Image 1 (cartoon, chains in turn purple, brown):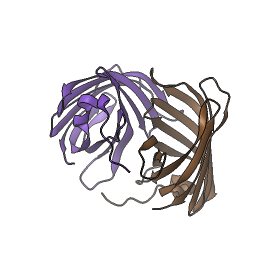
Image 2: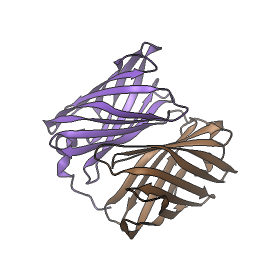
Image 3: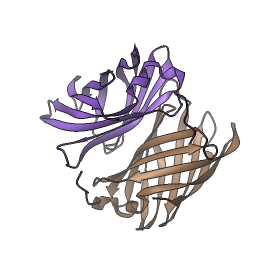
Image 4: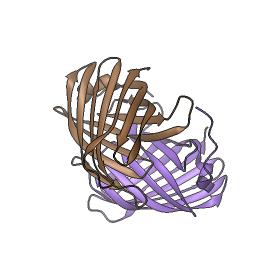
Amino acid sequence: MDAPTPHAALGPLLGLVGTWRGSGRGSYPTIEPFAYGEEVTFGEAGKPFLAYSQRTWDRPGGGLRHVESGYLRALGEGRVELVVVQPSGVLESHDGSVVGDVPAGSVELRTVAVLSTATAKEVQEVRRAMSWTDDVLRYVVDMAAVGQPLGFHLEAELRRVG
Amino acid sequence: MDAPTPHAALGPLLGLVGTWRGSGRGSYPTIEPFAYGEEVTFGEAGKPFLAYSQRTWDRPGGGLRHVESGYLRALGEGRVELVVVQPSGVLESHDGSVVGDVPAGSVELRTVAVLSTATAKEVQEVRRAMSWTDDVLRYVVDMAAVGQPLGFHLEAELRRVG
């Protein structure tokens, strides 16, 4: 493939491009608190979006805990959309905003719609906040699911590894 | 990571695991017919689903045309679900069935729900049929979108490259 020029609409999102690895913790009223390792990749290919993929594990060298993938879309003027799919059968559509100046920036996203397959657990709303510098990426996820109100679910701190 | 044993629920879907490359053609009442190159990957990691990702291009060495990613979920007894997200802002949930005996098999999927972000084009229904042997993967996609009835949209034939 030709090496494309990053799309101008990406703006501060360009600072996310690469691979990030670190650790996080999760809790929710219905489950035991847990810790996890995580790798996140944002890829660009000359289009006004980043391809997003993520995987987490319970312990180094251990099996997969969670994966998800999707696209972070730059709509211009600081507006962004995130569409994400999980193998549990949950599809999420979010919108929000991005601010920053490459390499640093931050994004705030909130759910527009969640679609669950017949066999997936029920998720009502997810809020994602993410901030990054050249070498550190942090995020927090709040969630309303399985009858619980919107509340803390996940936070992680990752370092750039690629 | 430990090398996990493939999940027993995958059944005939195991024949899909790998990377496939080839060419396809597309048409729709609202657009000019087109040809494309494509690479499709199905990955497994010891879980009852395959991670699916795909990219197409207009010509060898050319830029990206389309990408999508998601998960093909094995529910047991030949039932499957496909959840897919596209950077255009379209999220699709499908269910269907799989038949076969590794390495050969086939899947038929039809839309349960389509979710589009505010800025995405309108898609009402997608039907995907896919069949494979050890070295060839073929699929056909029918679609109802932008006010058109369900009709042919895409077909491709890919060869195993990994």
